[in-house]
Length: 246
View (cartoon, rainbow, N blue to C red):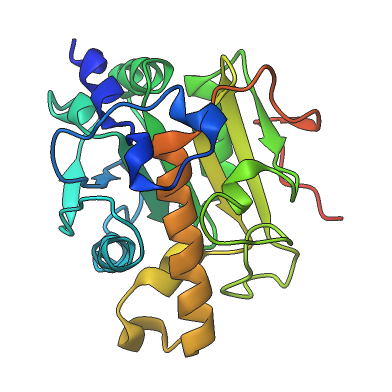
């Protein structure tokens, strides 16, 4: 088991990104950060391969985090899984994990790993089902606008930005917590990762791409530096349900 190696990926306070409280949990990076694209059965896990490459380049320009901006697919059953501090999953439809993939993803997340899921439209039903398989004992919590992820580097006073319209519903961010640590982040009706893709892919306005990349930077900073909290935000929603519409 290589889960212990995840602990080495937390940033040191000298990066200038941490609060005093967060610095208590900080350790130095041992190598440049790569984000792994999580593969799955049943859908287009490979969608927008330029997304995390562009995000990491932006992170490189706006923080002191050492990065390696490459497209790096990984299977949950791979021995390499525990080498990545951050996994990214996106797509448009079905998501299916095998029993072994479920077991390993649970172990990864309980041992310090972080999974960011972005609904690229049509992913919601399937991903909630699979999250319930990974964590039948945990709930998705809607993150309030005051949550630290929205303010840890760039400021997002209204929470996750609305990058693509989808069904025109308000954008929402949900999380799953383990022992006070956010281990799964799920964005719905927002689609920041489309704003990370090469400009000609979606033809998003520059201000939308900028907002998406800034929010992605916050995700990375928070995943690597978040302080352990006594409890998760109070508002919770079972992971098997659809996202509420305010």
